[in-house]
Length: 191
Image (cartoon, rainbow, N blue to C red; front, side):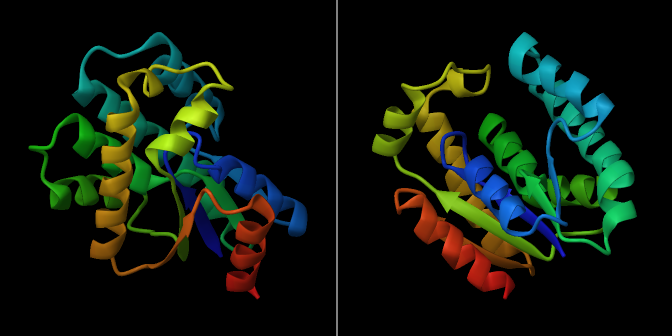
């Protein structure tokens, strides 16, 4: 099973991905961007050095996604694959950066990068302005987080809209719920 955790920064997706890996030790835990050697370099470029042009940023994310699919996802389809982020984020951020982009076009690009392989399940952790403020206070911001809370909330809404449009299984959880409760609910989906 190929499972992607989605959500904006501070939503708890990385925490839930790690907890699920602990519950299923044989699972493969990976992330986008940064799940491959090339991905680590692209992640550094995008999140810390910054990219001036949003089209360049989009193509760097797509390059990471294609590499990640071929090196990590495709060879391990017989395992539980837990990914911290995936193509939903890629499209949601691209739409937040350029609302004039066509969603169907972005889906086409991502399907191309993924050899038309979509995840079996997407888990979205949905947050709110107050929770983002609380959690952002405990960490340093990367280039994307510096775009502000309003930006992150628009990205989150894009994620919800994309999930509703796609024909894939998904679940949305309130990120303000207790971590263990969310974890147990997610495990229930896999039982």
